[in-house]
Length: 434
Ligand SMILES: *Cc1c(COP(=O)(O)O)cnc(C)c1O
Image 1 (tube, rainbow, N blue to C red):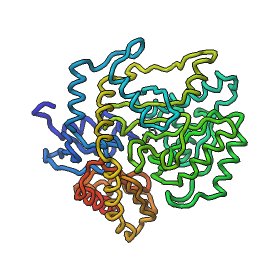
Image 2: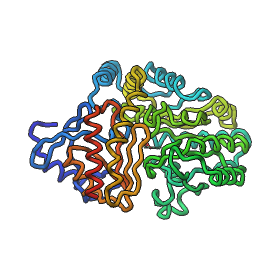
Image 3: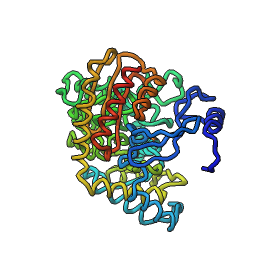
Image 4: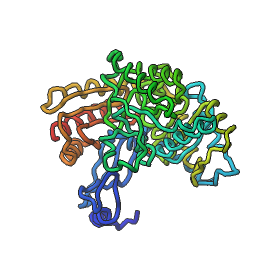
């Protein structure tokens, strides 16, 4: 940025011209202007030019698991930049893509063997859906083209993903007649440690059985429903889904875009249940928070079904598919993650969040406090006053982005104990201020 930029000017232009996520135009709330970021700290410039540092409680929407400006990830990016930032992936290949795909096959559940590199989480879900529908078309069951999910989910903002987002949170009423109409089960009840509810299990089995002839796949976020409400459920339900899908000839898709790479305490949330899906989406933490990248993995059965069909190809190929810069940083991020005792770090943060968020139960208006892995959630009994809650957290030196009735944190795994405590203080301040 030029030396002479005027923060107040930039913020004014931002408000006039730049859409922000889930925002109106022109913008009604003022975003914070970030100048740089390093480790777990964001350096923020006020309109008056004053600089402050905030401890990041969000990992930039759960992706920057090693913090910002990480020397190993920086080096991977620099090195790749010198070789090539990008080449098309049609008819060409390169080391970063092959290494990334191979690595993903090694660390994900056993039957997943083939990798489609997509350029965002939403696109990886589009690809997953395309794979499932095409599998059934190719194997002579074209009527199997609907999806089943449970309420309370989030799978991205493009069209197919939107159709399986929570119908209320995803505002399906706005889109009735336009979005594909999928089959919705009730939201999974209880918390992570609660015994599976037999009545709910029966509900899942019954719906899958009833719609089996038209269902291509069941798609869910395993164990943690993220942006749809930050709710945890018993891994037992995933075993029920696997059994019912096998029994009735329905594919099972796990969207691990939020949960993958250690966030819940297992490398993948599927590991809590010991269940493998037929198709799996990963993204977010895959990138180390540097450059957009996601992946859809599938089993040989799915790949062969598609590749032996009437149109024996998967017709999908984004311009920036397998971008070498993003792929090399993703490989470096996996090296950093797996080269340390990441599970111990996640457990350490989990303990810090449990201790630091416990006092929230005593705050008026707090309905629930829950922690799983490096995820801490305070749920209110009312809609968050987002401006007030954010301001209270910022005043406590912490960056949080509450939504709906939720104030939550997913800190980078490198967050030290003092900074975890500070983030918790920020969450409590936000809960008090909201
Ligand atoms: C964030 C998210 C997505 C969408 O990923 P984008 O990269 O934002 O398109 C899909 N599914 C889940 C579970 C997510 O958390």
